Image 1 (cartoon, rainbow, N blue to C red):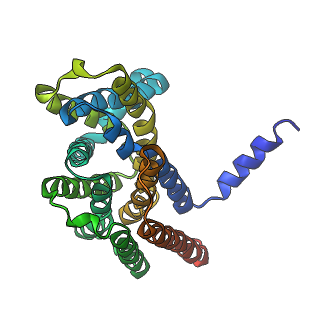
Image 2 (image 1 turned 180 degrees about the vertical axis):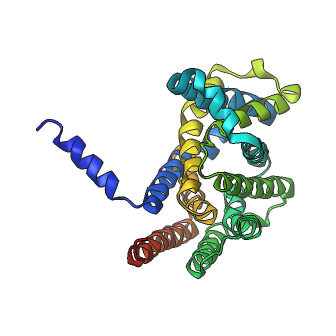
Amino acid sequence: MGNTPTLRASKMMSRLSPHMYGTLLTVLGVLVLTPDGLLVRLIGADAWTILFWRGIFFSIGILGFYAVRHRLNTLNIIRLMGFRGIQAAFFFASSTIFFVHAIHNTSVANVLVIIATAPLCSALISKIFLKENVSNSTWIAILISCGGIGFLFYGSMTGGNHLGDLYALGSAISIASQITTVRLSRHVDMVPSLGVSGVFFALFALPMASPFSVTSSDFSILLFLGLVILPIAFGLITIGPRYISATEVSLIMLLETFLGPIWVWLVIGETAEPETLIGGALVLTTLILHTLYNARLRARQPAV
């Protein structure tokens, strides 16, 4: 009798289709990730120093988990990723470097709205390299979501923060490339590539960083980001492309574009504009309808 709730939970999980399972993991990962922009903005250190500690703690968080769980087999798991693992690590490291510099050179709103173009980048990359057909419903959802985000941040893009905007665009392209690379190796555990990427951008940032200049409060934020927020969030997001398309993963990541500014409003006190509420509602509604529509289509497909 005592095991009844556990059995019920297990049965509920077993009823989930692989597509819905991947969708739920990705949504959870994005929700955990939403405070990232705010926390980076709250840190007083320079971008290179943030990147160094972010990479160190991120690697410890990801690779440390694998070392505890798999012990000596961890190195074998890393080797199994092969060239694709190195490629995914490179793209993720690039996206992180661009992201942190974008946050330091333009508004969080600008960064998130430009990164929201990742679904379009992902769709194009997937079509070229994976030969995936992007469904009409996904294209419609992307266009509506991007329209909602454009309305959400209308007016914030008129500033002269062109360097930061270019960094954000680089981050969007890198994110789309990383997701697509992971999908190319969907039958291999690619989560350790995140830990490898942390080593990459920590080493890249080290010559320009001042690691021992951070305050105790900044160090606490960096520790929380690197050991908790980032490993959980990107670990789940990296698992997602095993079960759903790269375009759908990028589409779900649009949630961060709406929820990220909410964190900024709650903590820093920036007032939410009417455009934020209207555009955000449009994005969320589109995501929900798109997910339910595709789940219904798959339920109608005959079992093979």
